[in-house]
Image 1 (cartoon, one colour):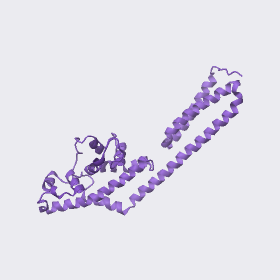
Image 2: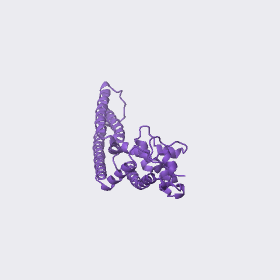
Image 3: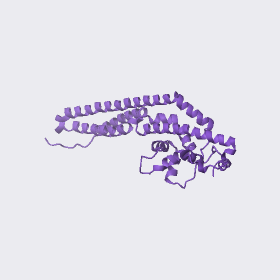
Image 4: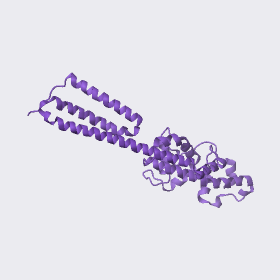
Amino acid sequence: PEFTFKIPSRNFFLYVMIVILILLSLYHKITKKHPETKNGLRFLFILLTLLSLLMYMIYINDAVKDYQTIISIVFSSILVASGWWVQDIISRTAMRRSHTLNVVMNQRNSETFTSKIINCRDVIGFDKILNEEVIKYYLTRDNSCLKANAKDNQDLFCKFEKVMLSLDSMAYIINYYEFIAAGVINKDLDSDLLRKCYSGIVLELEKRAFWLIYHIAKDNYSKQSTDFAYYNLLNWIKDMSKNNESIVLNKLDNPSQSQPSGKFVFSKEEIDTLFN
């Protein structure tokens, strides 16, 4: 039999509008509650719309009515498979969120992590930036950069030694957030939940430990590589920041860029007293 195309009637356009409204409503409700399904559902929405139109065209043409049953089965199978697919994404997301929550709670209940935080708070402070000279000494332990009479000011040198010890705690905290960032980037941890928990903390940490992160990362940094130190952390910070930037990555890309502004652990006069 010959297939003849019929000019769409008002019923056709009404059918199209109803189908699109139903699919849009379902798409909005599902993606609002489960944003992780948005990309897949967008493709599925287009596919189901086209299949609905195909079903209608087959229905109104007598020449292909013999295939209506087969097409209906295929269409129903796609709907069922789509439901399983959406449910699978939702289930995996729920598991990822549960795992993420366990990670956060383990950190909260960790005595080791808490002791590192307290040590950094008491010695370095939560609102001060570590000086570059101090970081260079911490990483190299080159005593030649210290002045011969640096120990004469006992109070200042005692503060300096405490900061040296607390930098181990700072490095521990940075490495922890690098681990968290790797989980986010590899989609093993829930990014939205961790953003709400840690965004302010991590962005402030990058500023406070700017020189520590910078000098460790710059040794094998390459803009095209993912193998340099703190790659995951810096890219996670970039993703979380309002202007989509990381101050350390900016410095790595442009070494002439200035350091972050703010209060430093040691004043300029103290640095001049300690270092050559």
